[in-house]
Length: 331
Image (cartoon, rainbow, N blue to C red):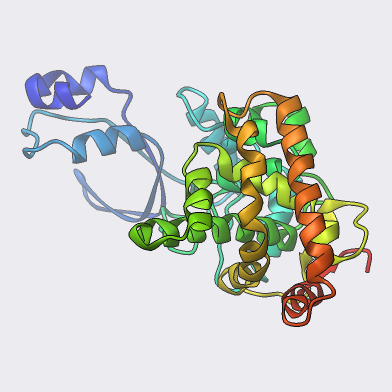
């Protein structure tokens, strides 16, 4: 498209499918002019991106067709968005965005401070191309949930399939999945990433243990394996049995920033054992048996140290505090 705009602009109109734009209001000013308010592109974002990225302003003969649609019926609006995008390649998550699970999760996330979750929705009848600096990306949430619920292979290698495959999707998005559980899992991911950034920024002054941790976290897919390993060890972290990982959430309805802070203490004590997970991240996180054995090894090693931690003054305080901050749905 960029090449057409720059080299043969007169052909752009006949080569391009054009834009479909939902609007809030259309006023006719003259017979050849209209006034539009509240625009949201539902088809043609790639076109606008291509035109906007050319180095020089397109010539006047570079034309594009545009349909402006004003509609107040929510069902028809959803159909317009879906049917228009069926003609083009769209994210698989777009077609999950209207299911009951994602709708309920969006409602629950509105009760959590300072975060936005769109649940697969990229904008349209309600979100007029908003930009959020506190957005929790739905695709990253899906990866985090897959890893935490013991499938780091899917999280790393099958990101797109999570939204396409009914079995994969329903294994992490069901009536048991709550916004506060997602916050619990996603904040762990963010805490790990924050630790990685800190180590990277202080690379020249790392201890031997910190170098080993940074080396592990620098391997592609390592975060997903670590998420799974920590999830498998949550009973040791909390010093109580856990029947269902989906029941885990923080006791208070906290912000993402506060949730990330809560993970810092437990991570400091358990990260030195990531070397046990190294076999799992070889060859692209694909060998399920190796992954399972590595996670088991990690759990055994952290269990040994946590037994000592739980009876050691000072160290015990860190995990007692964390345990009090975490609530099981069945509590």
